[in-house]
Length: 257
Length: 268
Image: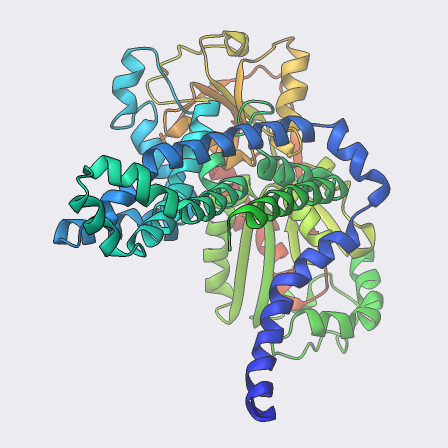
């Protein structure tokens, strides 16, 4: 690279790094380190973190079980229906999460198109932990499906022809050849979906509400703490930052390239 | 009140540079330093004011301040008013963290306690409000009194205890010895009200003004005065810009009073 192109690219790249890294540094600089441990273990922080872990791992499991077959079907077709389906599935990806929360209320709420029939059986989803998982799955699933579909499309088509000539059925090819080869894609899809679920705020507070121990996930606890005690909010934020880095780091070392 | 004007003007010398920095893009140079130190609102009553005024207001003021903003546009066509609504607790933290605002209007005087006092130029109480139970139009939970909120078959939504409506609701419920069956604590009063107007919750404790402003989207069930909690709303000037005075004068004016009155706020 010439110095000119180095400067032309390096300038914007440096700004990009600052935009992303500076807020994280600020969080670490402003933390009241003497308080961090007490804030996390003392107040509602533990409950919020536990709820966040339970709901985000449920979400990841839901993505794995429901999203993998969907990704497989999307990867094996190029028809008009598939293309439209893929476009529709990516809408929650770009939808403002609060709008997602309203849409979930319109679906699963007491007067929602599905929820009104559930109410007749005494099942009401809003304000429950299940609602948190639904909200997180709604925003996180597209990340998983797109990541896994991409990995499945990257498979060498000759593998399938060979498996076929050897007499393998569709499911057997999927189980013994395709799935083992896309494990890295599945892992990175899970990591993306899990991280998105962990950060979920708008859809959760709109659809599931905010109650300590039941629906107050860690990001909601941070928001509430900020209204009264910014230092406690910083402590919780640092905990969230730490958990995200550790989980993503573990996944990265193992599978994600 | 007249003393505040003089004190404010003295502070202007120090504030000048800071305010100019904070309001870049406002453009119009302030001339109020040359004005004689007589009336309280030379800038505002001396004719139409230009520039920009940024207002941070409690969520419960949404409808009334929107109306006051529209009225202000007639008297000061060149003044751009930007209003951001949120929970008073969040707004105070934003101002403490350096958010560039000119006016801060809060739900209750207690909400101003965490505010950095050095940022305050003047405080005026402009309205009062009390609590009321909001229920969906058909009142599906058959809520008739505060005691009903303890029923386990009822879904009750309150404001988070960190925001004024939540603190007031806690005081009232404690006074009435009611242990409400709470399913969610929302981040501000409008979010709390929305859960009822959407029919997801059977009851919420909000302000009387919110029930009035909801215009039939919810129904009000009164809370007796003996256990109710009254809040006095302060409007706080954070600088001495002419636009700041113009906005606060509009809130305190007879027209502003009428608007607040029509939307369920009591006299200060």
